[in-house]
Image 1: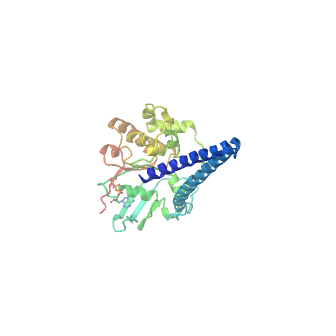
Image 2 (image 1 turned 60 degrees about the vertical axis):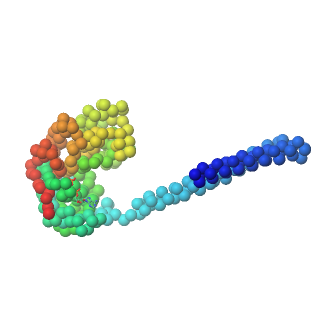
Image 3 (image 1 turned 90 degrees about the vertical axis):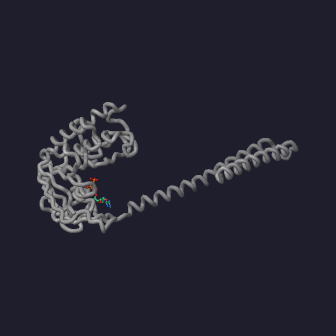
Length: 314
Ligand SMILES: Nc1ncnc2c1ncn2[C@@H]1O[C@H](COP(=O)(O)OP(=O)(O)OP(=O)(O)O)[C@@H](O)[C@H]1O
């Protein structure tokens, strides 16, 4: 109401001023005090000046909006990482994929009283698939989070080939892990770009690499129903795709980098039973020769695992 009143009144005032100037200017022209050219140039000059002043006030509003937004971005850029990304050993060789959780204790910083893992021990062997089962909230995803070193354990250690994850460069570590989460995060862009996002930007890829990942994750089946195939836009956070389609894209994104360690956290939970079997077969095939950690509730997802660990830790 206030905005409507303000803009209505200022608009009306502007028009009243223009009419008054025209009326007074008109009488001056009739009385030969002013020429028509002088009146016209005065009106044009006044008009352009008011447009400029109006533009300045808009600019000021936009400037304030921009400064507010930039402040939030600077806050993020200025944040000090708890786990520095460019710090730690970068081994010259690709890891074999032997991972061990050794008496790990962990709680999230936001909930220091809620101990999620206590004395947790797990060994993942190269080329083997380990399945992690447990009730909801028992800490299965947390284990994947720790393996990606998004957090450090409070006690105990996690080692990759006898090297503590804390000593390794997080960038190097993560470049050898492919993860498919319960709720895949897609970015606004095409399916193709979302899959290629899995690759290091400095790495050259071949179209056949992309095609292989697309075929193995069965993205081609769902993308053939979409208007532009792999060039279909997925929308903000992938809202234009179904849950199953998003999971296939996330699986292809993990596969394209051919990681040493594959984490599948309920990776096929949103697929129908036929697609699940197809994608699961592809994942089982792919898991051969890789260290694979599968987190699942469904028996069908873990039936081919070499070991099954129960995550009822407390
Ligand atoms: N970022 C976080 N900050 C604080 N607490 C968290 C965070 N993420 C998870 N938790 C808590 O940690 C516990 C373990 O969560 P986690 O996601 O690992 O369970 P889960 O076994 O994977 O469950 P589900 O099978 O339902 O996916 C839960 O109690 C959860 O509330």
